[in-house]
Length: 342
Image 1 (cartoon, rainbow, N blue to C red):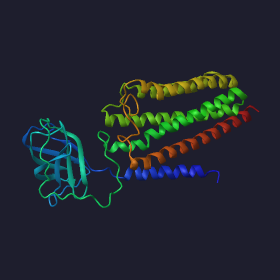
Image 2 (image 1 turned 120 degrees about the vertical axis):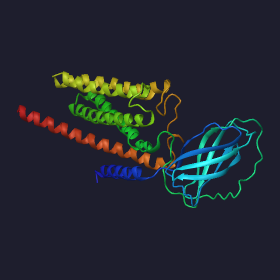
Image 3 (image 1 turned 180 degrees about the vertical axis):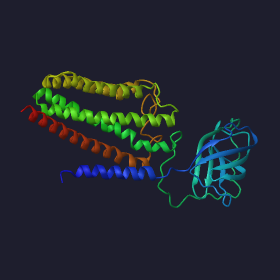
């Protein structure tokens, strides 16, 4: 029964992989051929994602502007993810920015917010319903992840990239606690614990950098950017690599353990500074820093949280399990070394 938490970690991660990778994204409107509409007739081509438009039951569409609705003159289905919409845009809309709404019998209402610059010139138009408008809400909403602009399918990386950094920080916390205990007790068992946690923590730091670089390539168009959070993560990883180099450069075991323990305390403080403090004091592309929101409606909703939080717990449990294995390996290595000396 003492190993129940290991089984829990495995079960959680299996569930995260199955649900996180197989759940489809919600339908979305991703592109319009015209983003600035002047009063008068206009034809717009719309590109959607994860939709199944049908000419037999074409969707309805309209432009929303501060509660006002400008209905389509005609809707043509070009493909299962493409439409051609014809509008007669009136003068006198209240707001400069208008939303595009497409209601599909299968997908329901799909909204592209601030899709058009409509150039408000009045106090509003007559609020009249669209002809033959028959919009009904879906009685059963399927479980789907939200579609986030720019992220698209890469939103699933949320279940891997972010939890890996959480796991890394937990392991480095375990490592520095062992280092403090070693300085107080001079017990090499505590030093072995600090080393094992640092090894596994570095592994998760590298995995975090790799998954983050892939995510940056998909969303920002580059594998790496000169961003405070990204640079801080890279510097933190190098600082802990130097921790391992320092240990290997001192032949005396106890002297190496004491130097490494002192260094580990400073390394932990620098990790907090580079990952938690400095990015919040400067502009950043990375969510959660420099005024860029994270863990909000832009990144998470109830459906994503149902998978994200188990992913965080699952990766932390897996990392802790790997840490215990590293400690056992270190203990066996020490026993073999003493046996060889004897």
